Image 1 (cartoon, helix red, strand yellow):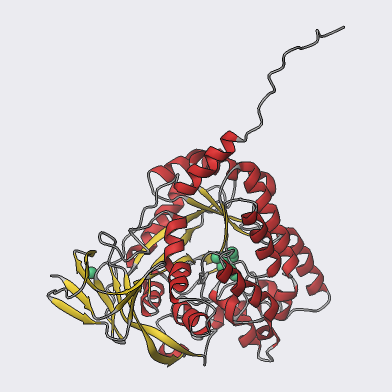
Image 2: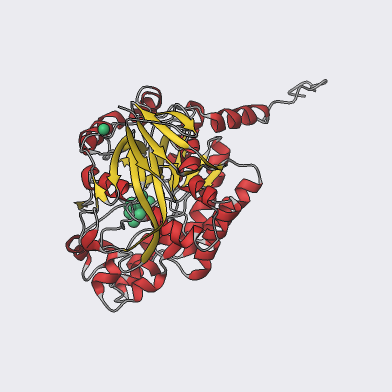
Length: 484
Ligand code: URP
Ligand code: ZN
Ligand code: ZN
Ligand code: ZN
């Protein structure tokens, strides 16, 4: 049975034009005027865009003594509700655990997904097993991105020697290095000092992670990646110091991408000064929310192209879970939600204000992500042959964000009370209409794993360049005799 999206305006990262879209077997089979299909979706007054891709989620993540509450079931439903049709989650091997073994655990969790998904692999420890399994993970299992936590000392953090070894291996194998860039040693020192001085509340979480810890770690990761010859993707870039390092690296021709979150773009540090403990603790995440100057820097980065994508780092804990940290801010599970709200919030605060064009919106929520992660144009495109992961976007549709009406399984929303204008009329996941004019028609288990091959265009270019410019011995004409 074919479906046709009629009377809409197609918006891609580079074009805006009126055309219908014909879908069959989960794929786009034709784009043009006056198309007919068995089922018709009316897009009058709407934009037809590639579905959003969230490159950074933690669904049912084991973290800080608990599991994040949104799993692949509620998480992907929340995604689709907000126009996101693919999520990329992080596989987290335990200490000493093999990468492939950990991946199997994630495959068991993700059977519930109602939209497509992919994984990044986290390098949470370093050893021969990790080194040996990396090629299998990339070549057989379709995971080409590997995340390194420079924070969370004593838990997920890796040190510089481990990072350099891992980056070098990835450079060799055609993978991409990801970093959570915060200096975990300094954070640990600052946290202990704050606690000792009686600073136990959620605001101390922000005090313990100033912009300098992020700027320093971003710089360090960039330099290590450059020496190792691997492209680098910096997750949740939240401040000018980190953005500045990324901007400079890109101007120098280094292959580095920065990923601001919708939360950092639209919420600021004043949230932590709220008199209500729960309000502040619900917003505890790493890096923390920053001030307006940092927010301006992130917006400017998206406009200028020095920052490439917008994510959520969706890692949703209930109020009850957040309360593990009453009396000690270091025990508040780190993470906030946003999957359902990323697209409407970015449209409202980005496109409606004139900070972003609709085409730039598509680039940073979908197409750039698909290109960087090497799944374009299967994803992130409105092209014949691409998956029919589409959002029919109604720029006039409004709502006030309320936890009571959300798909996410937690009991609050960090954007509570904000009015957004610009929402999906329809969201299609491989041709299936999961959101139909405000009605949820998701199908648990409809989602499929998206393999992403290694050695993409950026890897090839970088390895050619590194080979060409590698240090070489000088061929000398005369060598003096030794031992004289
Ligand atoms: O606070 C955060 N960001 N929690 C999720 C894990 C991570 O660091 O990405
Ligand atoms: Zn992180
Ligand atoms: Zn994260
Ligand atoms: Zn289906």
